Image 1: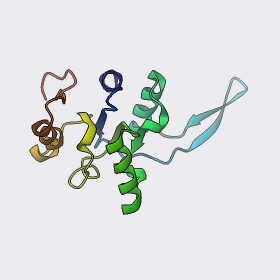
Image 2: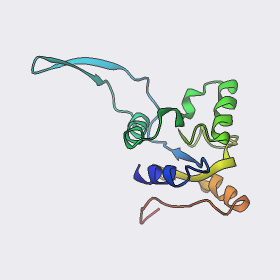
Image 3: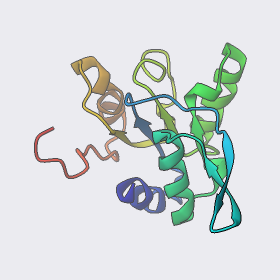
Length: 150
């Protein structure tokens, strides 16, 4: 998430947005469980979530929680339209979601600075959004986030 944070900072003045694709899992409802360690009560997350982990790491670096969103939370067309408007305006600057949920019909390219794939996309069409934006605006960055074999 270092690269996402670096680009978040670099494109701050332009409110540059980023898409983070993750097909490894979907966001889980965050359940908290109480546990006892050495007689001290603590609260822990019940299950690991890639989405929550990414969000929490970005927040830990200083990204405001309101600038990070999960596409999966927009569970109807009205919520999707509202979320996409926030991304296009730069209010939400990092949008996480699966290839299926953020694929065709996700019209958020207005301020798009980068897209990231946490796992390898299976189809060439799944990596086209940033390249289509690149044809329109020449100030986008296409990267494999340091992977040698992308």
